[in-house]
Length: 428
Image 1 (cartoon, rainbow, N blue to C red):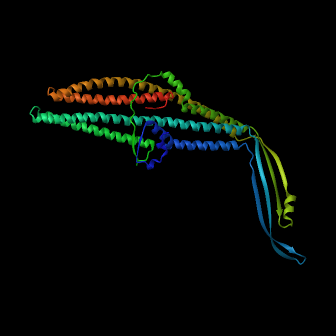
Image 2: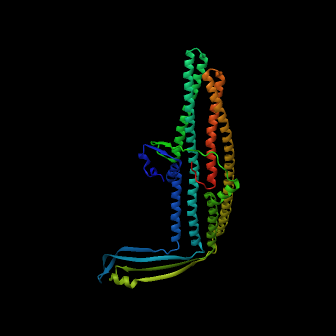
Image 3: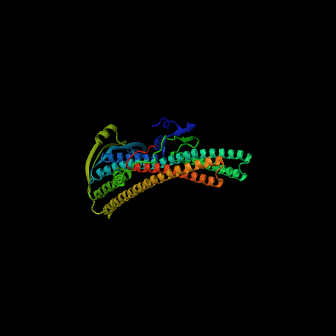
């Protein structure tokens, strides 16, 4: 992990992270993830409690009394007031020896719940990974758009300067100069719009990462962006995902948890055998000899208690019926999860195919319009081109440029999403 993550971000004046650092930071600090981790800890505590359920308990008790009464004083018939103490002390223990397999099933169910909590964390990490990747690529798109539009604006400025010189020389009409000035203003507006879009997308990424608002934040631009790649078959990716994705495993665990719940419900028909024991003593202050009384009154008791359910007012029957319904519901959830995942992968497959085709077409159109615009730019310098035709060609070039950049990053995003479904980590 990048060492910058270990620092307190509130003390940082600025940050500049690559995609992997963003992902590592989000996995450590995201509120939804940390909330799931707390739920996992709760599940672990419930497991420990369930495991302790097979052990005997032990309670100590001590009761102390202060008694006041009047007792006869000799043979005179008078009574004497007195206060004396008395008490009972003991240890009590009980141990469930048999409960129809309920305790064993409860431990098994709590173990599965801990596994489910772990898978929920992995599922949330996957969701956050794709969100951050999309936001990151949005910022990269903005940055590249700004670079291209800066070049366009620089060319527009040179064209205006040249037109002004030619106007002074009388070789160009004022109308042509005005048109170039208007185009320069439009190019400047487009650049400002792109810069604002970058600021907004950086803010969105910061919010997703939960980086403090007081921190200046930017991203690292990778050397290359992969927009073309050989695509693995849809069936292969679906099979890999169905076998490995945490949401599928979690849904399968849901069935296992429900089946163990059925075993717990059926244990209600079984008898419960409990062992119990008691040791204790007492004393009464009205009789002398405190330790003698405790010794003489010391007693021990052990016993077995058998509870057999005979008529439970339909409680056990209802519990079993509801447990079976929970199994059916869990099976439907698994089916729905698999169906949704398969459809999402199919959509990702279609998206990546379409995005690559669009990228090829956009690249071809961009190169063609770029060359045409270059020729038109040379012609306008020489004064052999119509101004209206030149501005039309420039508009086509800018449109082709924007489509090319968008297609480039859209193709890159769809590739990362599709590869992520087959278990490859996201990286640029």
